[in-house]
Length: 390
Image: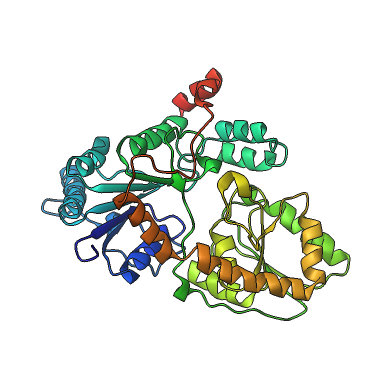
């Protein structure tokens, strides 16, 4: 099967998913065709077959208006040929975060028409709507705990409700496999499988430090979402109480440098508002750190037992005291973390699992998640009106 299957992976490079899947499939012996809309500033060394933003229309005419129109048209045609080349040569298509490369989602229709396999991976903000997320947290009894996170989601400038819904509906109409999680799956109605962070483990040096004065790292991509204010407030309090540690707040650091830092650090504090275990937490475990982040193990099916210390703004103080006071406990969590990642987050195993699922699809498969709640009909009219205005 490996010799016959070529796998397309594109387009939005979020959290290095395209590059990680590329490495995973290639380690398994498959040929890949990787395409990114643009290069992600955090992963400048990542290699792709094509970067769409770097396709330039040829200047056959002058530099006036006509010339610019011609170059734009030429670039669009070139992008379409990239997809058509992939359609001719690839048997499986991975669309990271959904999206589309052709107008009117013609690419989805052609993939279906030519009996190719389509996998859509959802990762969060591209389909998460703040109001629906709020209703989900209310139903679970977590609205107060996640109130600051909900407010941060509300203020994010990432597409409208209608864009998110259209993205979900396209995936549910055409995909053979959808990977997602309940924390951002409120718009989904079709059963789906769990989206899991996959790492190419040779890229991560595992090192456990036994120093008594630990280095703590917190690397938020969005402070409000990650609960950074509570992290800083708690660490300042612990410092004033005499606890010894070093702290680095990392923002806008290329991932390669961050991974090197994680190999030298001892404790990683990730998201205090999360419902699942994210990329930084997984990378922290892979490099030998004790990791703190919040997650709802049963809701999102986090494999248990999990060495990540389940931490939110209400218990971060106590959890950090435990780690700072008990060196052996910290070392134990660090060692367990790498084993956990090897078992559950190895991208080769995840890639192989995906292919096994779509090529051995049963009539009545057992899905990880089956949506049960319909919040879509209950969105207030004033919110929808505001979304239409946007």
